[in-house]
Image 1 (cartoon, rainbow, N blue to C red):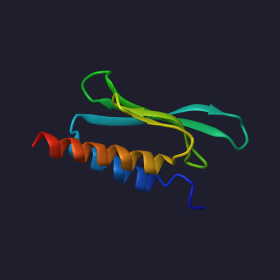
Image 2: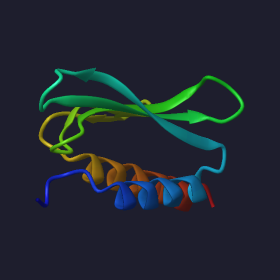
Image 3: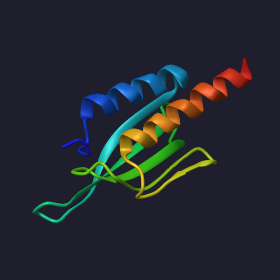
Length: 102
C-alpha cells in the first residue's frame, strides 16, 4: 500500500536533512503496540553531542500517518500528513533556511 512507511525513503530523506544539519542524528522508539495490529513509533531528531531535540514525530508504523509532530520552534504536524511528507517539509525548511543564511 502506498500509505505504508517505506523505511528506505525515510532513511534517504533523513540523510538529506543531515546533509543540511550535520550535527543531526535520529532514532526510532516504540511507544505502543496493542499486540495485534496497531503500533505507534516515535522518530526523534536530535543533536549528536547533546540531548537537544530538533524534532519528534509520533506516527502509526503501519499507515505512516503522523499522530503528532514538531520540528524546531515553527513546524507542527498532525494526523493529516504522512511521515514521509512531514520529513520532506523539514528538508524543505532546512534548504530554505540555508539559502537565507548564505
